[in-house]
Image 1 (cartoon, rainbow, N blue to C red):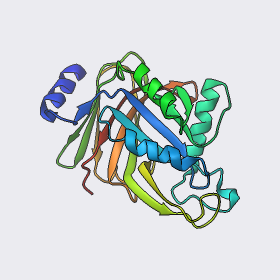
Image 2 (cartoon, rainbow, N blue to C red):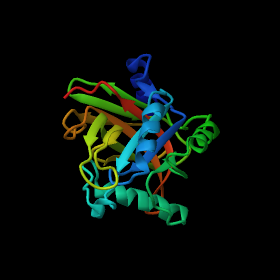
Image 3 (cartoon, one colour):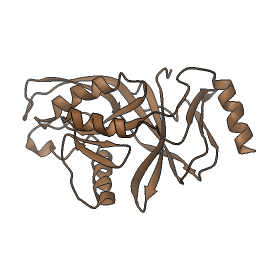
Length: 237
């Protein structure tokens, strides 16, 4: 029954970007207080133009003590970066750091290495994820997949410009792409076709103008391999 419902939703979605299986999810852990981060922020804006990639900026707060409090940071993102390092077993946490598909850590400014990781993911993520408009909000759908996991909603700001007044980037005007504003678990994923309904308010966060849905494996208490993703670019409040 769930498979039939999922197929009906896909028929209703039609063509275009409404459902997708991107090659890779790129998570950039960055900070306004880190002088090495702006180069990675610029690369993130380039990669975000590729419709086969889902690029996310997650500003962390552990450099705030240097004299500038990051205006976009959330401690939750710091905890997520730490959880990735715990899952890998390397305890390697720094900025700028990119994590590709939940498993591959790379210095965020090392463009060739990041693009090598993207090429290695050429087969795409295994779970098809769809986002459909409904009368009251949205219908999120995840197709059949090889592993169990969780479904997460991430409201984002597609472009945010910040002028830094203190710290290592004092005087700089920095642009951030697909800045995550919140992370909310909206369901469990058992490897079978799944649908979740959301109101527009549930898909909203202050400052957001779009949202991303992730389907991700769990590695014990920590995030694991990325299974699927989709971005809703035309979200109306």
